[in-house]
Amino acid sequence: MKTLGFVLFGVALVAMVGVFIWTLAADAGEIPGVAWVIGGSLGAGTILLLAAAIRDRLKAKKDEQYLKGVDN
Image (tube, rainbow, N blue to C red; front, side):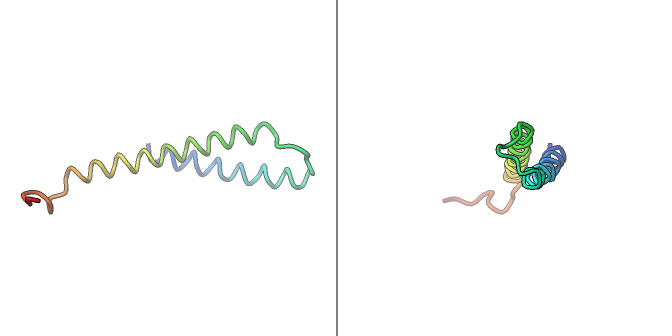
């Protein structure tokens, strides 16, 4: 899931920069429709990366030994 998130985020980021440069160079008056799709995939990649980080943190929390046996 982490690899998919990185790939999706990276490709979408590069594509978004390309669309931005093309929009400036072509002097387009409005945002092309493909930019909305790219923005959605950028958001999906971000959500996947956040979900992977949260999942990894929850797994690590279960394995932490330094707080086991400590009474609060």
